[in-house]
Image 1: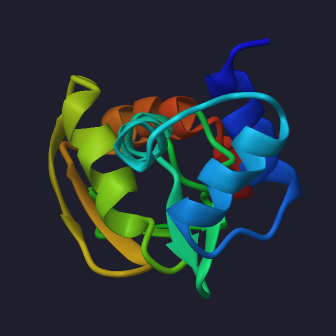
Image 2: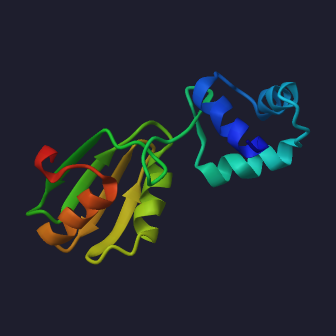
Length: 135
């Protein structure tokens, strides 16, 4: 396993508040890694802080999706995620190139997605790995 694998494992299993703590934990495992490298890898992994602790997003888009609501005839989708994850989720949706997604607006824990209609909303649900029957 590389230091990056260990970093991911540490974040998933631990309660780390600072990058310095992660650097020290990696050192305890035999890896000499600088804080800047840890910072870049955390960003690559989509890791953010929730309630002061580093957390790994639990969806393929880089953020957990807890709730999906569809309104406006299937043209507006409202997504709920953990605090601080909405910008990550919104950017991942914007970058996905799903046909019929016009754009997103992200707050702290909520993302609004404008779609062209039910077909695009179904494609978004597939991207989110969120079954449409749950919507």
